[in-house]
Length: 291
Image (tube, rainbow, N blue to C red):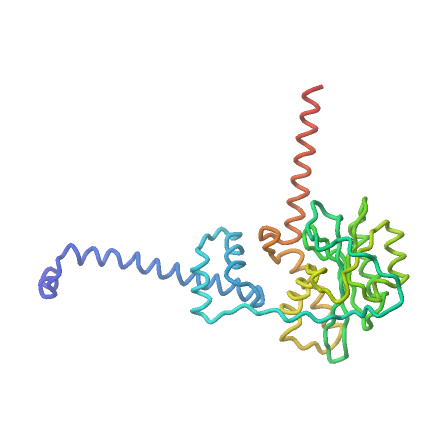
């Protein structure tokens, strides 16, 4: 070994230091490759919709802390790029003779608790059997889809069925603002009667203004990107099954939102009720101590 060092004109101490460091370099390379694999797995599991920031927070949930720039470099090196959403397209018609409600929500999409503000809209999915229409109701507190309905026709019944599911699931105990566009499905007597019987306050967007219902439009953007684009459904039932699984098992339970501190809708709501229970328990304990 010393002979080789003399031939290479290298100090033995430097050579042994290099040999010792090779194990550390190999370990670092293995860690980098493992991280790159984890980043790619997270990207693919999001169906190519998570960018570096969402991947960063998804990895943190797994206990991995890594620089966002590093994630960006990995994505670039692997040629991974998040899908972009499509431009908004109107699906409902506001040219009808039904009364139109004023815009009470007025783009105030924040809610302090569940069942204070709901928003709704309709979109469509193409199948080889024809169009499938999807109506949803979203609780603006945690962006959760609390009610949905699918049908072959875009009618007021589609909206009423989705509302009926949401109401039975949530059973609100106080007044709820229910916001939508001014389409005929929402202005129809059948739907307006449901709102009145449930003591809901109706709110409608201004004509042709999608930003007045931005939260639902954002949801449909994610829905189209993750479920519709790139998929060809042979039947409406095939589309129904995929949409049901995405809403209930993926979107509500696991899909993280930057507006929810990178929690899923279900996680954010569970955290809220947990904090409420803690406050109630604390107040109860205080009352017992004072008595």
